[in-house]
Length: 169
Image 1 (cartoon, helix red, strand yellow):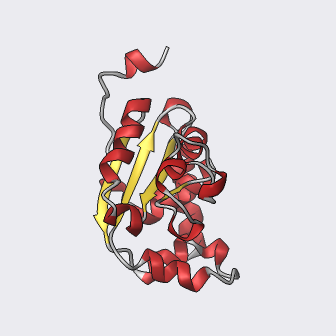
Image 2: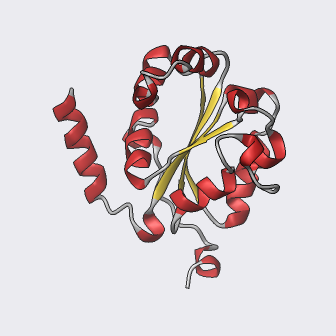
């Protein structure tokens, strides 16, 4: 299993996910879907100039969620997190653009909504950590891992964005 993951990771890393080809994983959590915030979140990323390369609505399995949140498995809230994330549909997205990982994290705000600036997703739509609407990759490496976890290769689309000449120098 580890060899398969490392092989996949190496292939993704070699594919050139840097510069304007950098990608990040964004997931609208069940509370964000229930509160009908999906369109608003997509709108924010599109307005910023990022390109949507993967999108799907799914009921995440417990196995997928445990793998996604593997680093948090020893935390006391892990079990509750898995229950919450499997309580309703999730919208999984892959976005592409220059510094998209770092910029997306700023757009989302802090994990704790009380620490989030006005204008960020969490600063506008969240009150408590346990219902913070959205997940975003925290590094290019975790984005590569998370995208490969949530999407099959044929579910990611390379397409020419006509507005890129107006976004990038």
